[in-house]
Image (cartoon, rainbow, N blue to C red):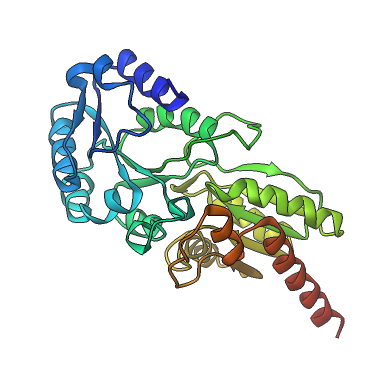
Length: 310
């Protein structure tokens, strides 16, 4: 079994309320159906039905963990999530597979680059974006303990972030520290490792850079954002998401609520679909590699210094 399968099996065996549900998306849980029996439900390619089933299970005291491609679990059943899960405040965990740029070779219909915007806008629905498999496995049990509905950006593969503190809902983690940082990069999910690499390049260029993994985008760690604005000259939001509605918007909202101003630069997908291709090609094409990111940040910092010196 892969780590995610083991996690789901452990959760089901330790809590009789938990049921695993999928909309014919078994790629990361192939070993579970014969083991879980009637606590594994596959509704077929019917995401609206899946959310309806999950809501019904939750009303009966269960905690369903549902799975589909990220673009499909957020968009196809949006009304069902809003009405059946959000309004009712039910504990349904919705796991979106291949979010963001991870859908690389697929076209725009499969690109979940508006998923954070869509899901955080629903009252009673929270958002968790793990940086790697270890964080996903550490976080999912905590979401269950916290209760309520959650959207999770699924991430599998190597563990890329050294965990310095236990996962806590609504608490960001500094993964690269810097004394008197010139730049603080706020990020989440797959691009956390890229941000770490970019920070290393910037440090070699004499630009002290802190990297903060936000982990949950709702609830957000407002204190981490305020600290970034107060302690660094430039705040950078980095995400594989549209510019509207994601971390950039969250940071703007947080600073507005705190009545603070800051020099904020956003590195994201702007307002365009990304060009399909292999993952590395997509990242290079859209400026989301460590080299592109560090160059963009360094240019901004140098330009800001020139303005101050003028």
